[in-house]
Amino acid sequence: MLPVNLDIDILRSFALGLELGSFAKAADRLGRSPSAISLQLKKLEEQVGETLLQKQGRALVLTEAGEILLSYAKRILELNDEARAAVRGVGKLEGWVKIGVPQDFAETWLPDLLGRFSKIHPKVRVEARVDRGVAMVQAIDKGELDVALTWGTLARPRAEIVARREIAWIGPDGFRHMPGGTLAIVAFDPPCAFRKAAIDALDRGGIPWRHAFASPSLAGLWAAVTAGLGVTPRIVEGKPPQLAALDPKEAGLPDLGAIELALHVAETRLAPPAEELKRLVLEAVAVR
Image (cartoon, rainbow, N blue to C red; front, side, top):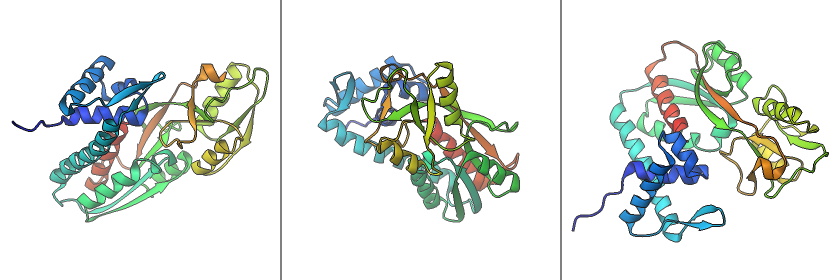
């Protein structure tokens, strides 16, 4: 009997849905319908001969078999992506590339991506900068960065919108704002697109607010929210496990909509190392 080969596309849907906490969101990111993702998951369970997900309240959680498969799926996907990039490069690239990213990505998928890139292209020197958007576009103008990702276009005419992410209220699980009370917000000081989105939504909803805690680092914001100093408007990527993405209706808060992720480049024609890293970063953004 021939061994069953697991489908890479199905494994990617499986891993991405669990990473995002929603297979509907995974379907949207991958350009598929939710029903197509459901069929993929059913096929995956048939391939491994085990139930991978089970209902727990309104959520789907991994079974023991699902946890084991998820660990292997991540490794398989990393090897798949690394092999593809290695064959494309075959050690041809060399030079220097400088990239800037928001803190949300620097604490999640970016370090692994840069590690794989350096392994595939050992002759390329990579410098990564984690900073606020305004500082990064200034660095682009000065030639200190080749490529940068920022939240919002920052009114830059050459900025390219490459993705959109839903903004969520992040706070303690079960948090609810009492009607008539003043909401304590934890956020970066302005200019901050997340802070602006939250304030605009609160003002439209007639909800009083105060900026209770500011920090130059995302880690500082998470620490303040964990300590109960307020709630923060942010994307769910990188959210600490002790905090929850709040349902706006249940929490008595307004919906925050989405935020644009913009790409900025220093030159209209990038050097090959910068172009290759840009391509890999955009691929990573597209499937998350």
